[in-house]
Image 1 (cartoon, rainbow, N blue to C red):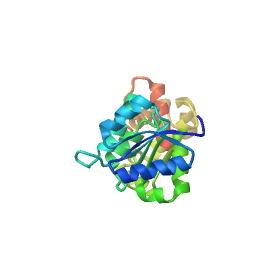
Image 2 (tube, rainbow, N blue to C red):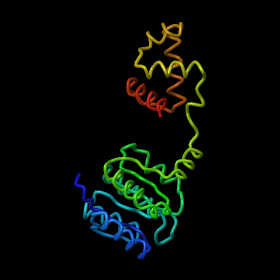
Image 3 (cartoon, rainbow, N blue to C red):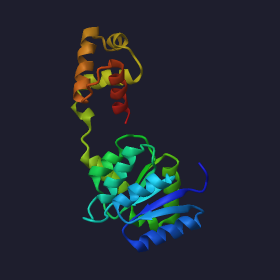
Image 4 (cartoon, one colour):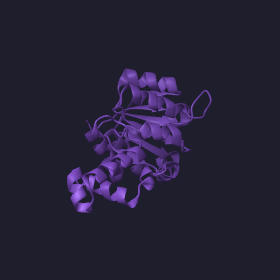
Length: 215
């Protein structure tokens, strides 16, 4: 990726769009298109294939969550599209969906952060490079929204999952925990059920369970 980023700016405030263009231009980046609503964002990204899109959450017509919904649509069409959301508010529902793929290249900052230019420009670069940048208030609200699925596991099931994370087979886990192979299998199946992992591929479910443990 070039040091010069090609950026789409989507915000219903003309003043903020102009301000962001000046900030980005001063940093050596190019704003290739602007949009004042969600459909405009989707169209601009499809046409220009930018390195990054800066997106407001609340845009016409209802001024609720059109920007985030448009951002989710953009990512659905092209999962590797880089999106940095700027908002005065935290909208956790679509923010959760935007982050759900785990592909990176996503950020969510409150607009107050834009006044801290160095931090804002660092976030622009990080997200365009495939990183994830979240405002602390966004993180706090997402954490409150999510119930940790690991809370449902018993201490023994946590021990089994920790051993799985080390790459141990069921037989090796049984030897370590001094239980039967069948006992480990029962614990494993309960772990999968509690973590809502229903894939047919047993190995794939083990990987997903370990990822849940490590997060």
